[in-house]
Image 1 (cartoon, rainbow, N blue to C red):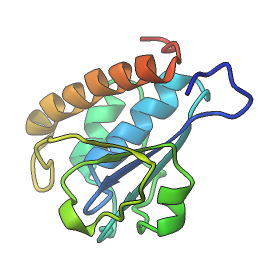
Image 2 (cartoon, rainbow, N blue to C red):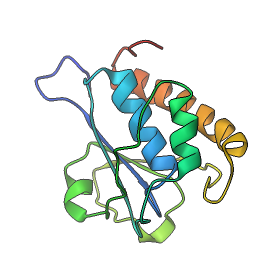
Image 3 (cartoon, helix red, strand yellow):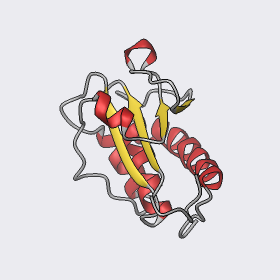
Length: 142
């Protein structure tokens, strides 16, 4: 889907706890798309709060995800998204024929310090830039 259509493309990021990887991905896509992409994130078993090391790692790049809360994955969120990016949720993620799915194999930042989260964050940023290109959206401030 191109950014030149009447409707914004939509992307859903899913991981188990919706506290690290999916929140960082959503933060990057929100910031780098400049609002040209509708962004969602959710988890199959949401945590109580976002991983503080993920928050710190993102703040280092000027992206503030402190106000985000882990959300439960719903079938509606999957149905309403053009692209579903899973990050380690395996069989707990719902699947709908006709949706574009990507599975990003990334280390889980749970319980790790910011030093260990930085390389995960940087890999997510690289993948987000690739996804923007595939969606036909020019990154903002990249």
